[in-house]
Image 1 (cartoon, rainbow, N blue to C red):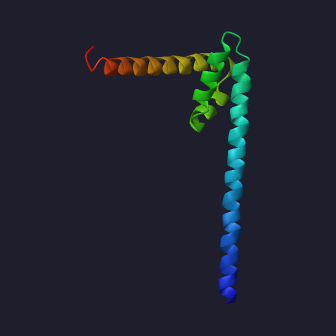
Image 2: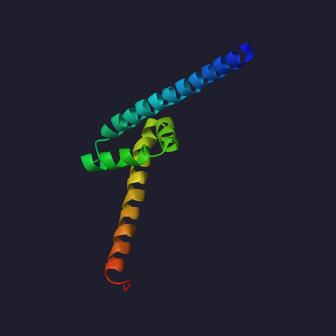
Image 3: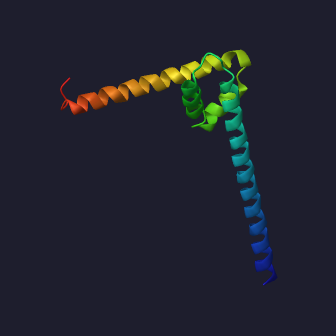
Length: 107
């Protein structure tokens, strides 16, 4: 009986540890997302719409957030412009596909 209680307590403590790590990770992600927008907001050559699009694209993937925040300051604007170009290409492709579909598949 005592072994069962000890195993239960050990498992409970381990689960609390995992939950604490996940909450910390989520907190760090939220902090990093805010930091990404703060940095992008200070890029004067972008419109407000471009700032929002770039920020939303970068924060979609934690790996992009990590890369962006690890870049030297002078490379961040270029990275943002690269993300905006990717977004623009995808949007253009989707529009072309919809147009083709609306024309019954005939271009």
